[in-house]
Image (cartoon, rainbow over all chains, first blue to last red):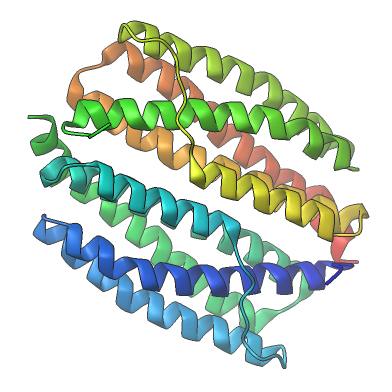
Length: 163
Length: 163
């Protein structure tokens, strides 16, 4: 599909995020299983629930636009998730692997933060007021998840991993 | 290579960033060529120069560790750059393409921001004081580049693209 207008581009990025969130949802159980730190496992489990909500929020945005929710392959998230898998398989275990899992999960969060930021900026210019609220709710959750991971790294994981 | 310690993981992420920065340096000329907004072109040209410095900074960190600078394939940055290329080819041109280029460039910045954040946190735990300074210099440039792109989007590109 040729993208001719900012509205087309918004739709493209929305589909991209819909695909991305679904891939994240699929990848989280593996990350949870490999996490040894209780706080990290809990944070990832909470984020799995949030991701389900976020997918529903994106479906509502599609609905507002009179469209069926549909994803397009997002090579960025695929690469980020592949890298996360690689880290999980190459690190032998323990706190070092947990440190790697946090680094990988934060790369996912940051991708989503930038994409939601872009979608919100465009939605504002395009006057998509209802979409803005839903996208901002998703963005706030991604930022909170990122901040929680930083805290877990600083307070629990990195100290032990460096010991 | 099996990653056994936080020090090994730091080295792995450092190699990953070295590869990533080099790929970014290779991808910037194409993004500059496709940008129509003067401010965007200038920002990307400035960032190309900064990226060259950042690569040198990473080489200094390798040197401090008594290692030869060497990259490892970073699937995350490869995916992010592939997506940027896809956006540039699918958007027909004008301000809409510039809006897409900004979105793509900000995904690159955010990946680098999260990775430098992680590397700095680990360097602090590992007592790599000289490395911290160099990594913080790179992080500050990435954050400034991201903020500059947001400003260009808000002040120049999005308004026109939405018109």
